[in-house]
Amino acid sequence: MTIHYHGTPISPRRVLYELSGRSFCVSFAAPADVAVCHQIGQSVMLDNGAFSAWRAGKATNWPGYYAWCEQWLDHWTTWAVVPDVIGGGPEENDTLLLQWPHAERGAPVWHTDEPLDRLARLCDDWQRVCIGSSNLHPPGTERWHRVMTAAMNRICTRRAPSWLHMLRGMAVAGYGYPFASVDSTDIGRNHHLPHRDAAKMAQRWDAVQAPGAWKPKPEQMELVA
Image 1 (cartoon, rainbow, N blue to C red):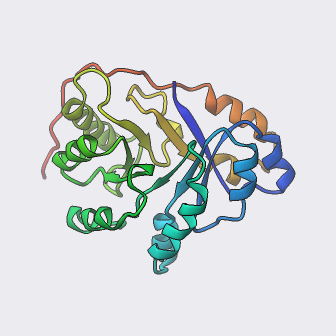
Image 2 (tube, rainbow, N blue to C red):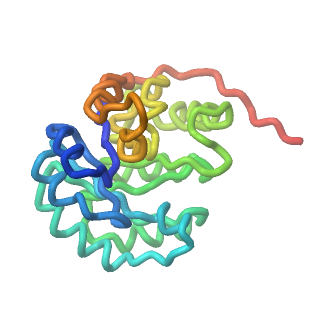
């Protein structure tokens, strides 16, 4: 089974309450719904907001993020994404891992443009690992499938060695990779459009499940011009 974390903010507030019993993703960049999500949700994922900050050209505030996480990690069904540098290298991101103060309650991020050896090492050291796509590998594209196939062949003997979470990956939950959880802001961004209903959208998303095991597949080599 796959847990689907629905990204916030979701407004108006009555729409968020219509999703009671679902799981939610709350970003440090937009934390207004965090208390309500803990009141009505099954599980809450705390996102570090790095992507939002990077896209807006803003600086990150990791000490503030650590403190924000601490108050919500009292809930055992809540977990947090360890800070990462968008476009940074493995060394920068490994340095942030050393600064993370909440131990196993966090999940580091492996980006698809990083070495597979780093993914394997993270799976050895952490119970939960997030996968983040780079600009080179938009989710669902041929390039993304190539790198994901290579990654799963590398780390999975049969089942995944850690809980794998696909960041912004709800649309690829049913593509055959053993994701334990995924997230998306689709409901928050689009429920107000014509012929859309937040509860029905959540029902459709939550019904898409990833497999529990991985069968090795042939790998297609990247063509170099």
